[in-house]
Amino acid sequence: MQADRKQVGESFAEWLRSFTGAPLILGHFDADGLSAVAILKRTLSEADVRLTGKGENPWDPAMRAELAERAPAGIIATDLGVREGDIVPGTPTVLIDHHVPTGRPGEAVVISGNGCVPEPTSALLAYWCARAIGRSDELLWLAAVGLIGDMADEAGFPELAEAQKRYGKTALRNAVSLVNAPRRTASADATPALNLLLKCRSPKELLSGQHPETAQLIAAKEEVKAEMEVARRVAPKVRGEVALIPLASPCQIHPLIAQQWRSRLKDKVVIAANRDYRPGWVHFAARTAAGHDLIDFFAERRPEGAGSEYGSGHRQASGGALRVPEWNRFVAELGFPEEQIA
Image 1: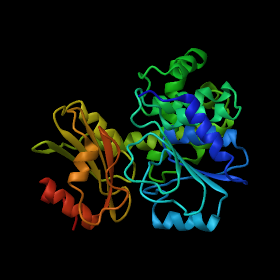
Image 2: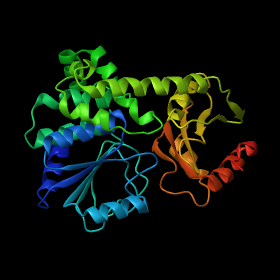
Image 3: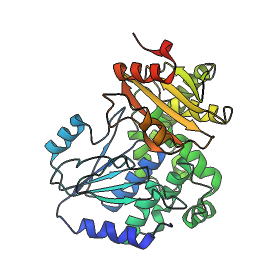
Image 4: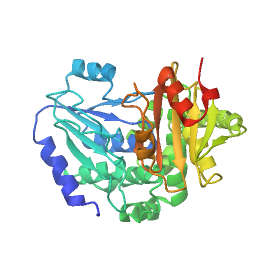
């Protein structure tokens, strides 16, 4: 099934007509999510923006309470998944996403690229939404940043081909690398990256250094690079079909480590687990080159007490987070009892 650009745009335009007032845009803090937020904010200038931080998602009780108190006229959640239940009951909500759904999101309108071939990322879906309500091609490079950031650059989307022709492949890739850096730092503050995406007219402007945020992104990249040098020296533990890589870093390096080992352990489910990313939790990223369906893999091994943070994402790129007691049950059942946390 191919994505229908016209239907995506019409669904979004119809949703906007269903209420009056300024919506709140919620978004993930990676390159795809940030680009989607930037496209939507530059299209709906009156909208407020709230980026998620470490371990946050809008279905968590704490964030739901925060959003209910803010009482926005509507909610646009992008690149944050499709999960069970309304975010804020009674508030018009649209979810712009491409991950595997893990529940029915109440009354929300869902604009999803999941299951489409090729699969549009959240930023590309947001771009189609923006085009439907009159925005010009000035936002095209942002859609390209999202596509490259989520490794959809070989999917054959004409929007990416046009953006590469107009702005250059190297500039777009370098922009993605910088934009992705701050969310991997210990603070996980992606605000400087979003500010650049909101103010710049091209990836070359983002990279030029004329805006102070570029230096902040370069510093963030160096912070993550130093943590990666340590993590690369950690040897995986292999039991059966699973390779576990135990990490201890305040930075979000576990997805990068899992991706690096994926190509070296091609017949395994590679899980990089980080016990120091957030106090009281273990965050983990899983990758596989063996054809495993990781959504099913985690669903079959779901420990009692796991929340909505567990086992979301894509079929070959999943992960999540567990509180320490749930992690201890999970990792012991997985065959690594020595990785339990006292």
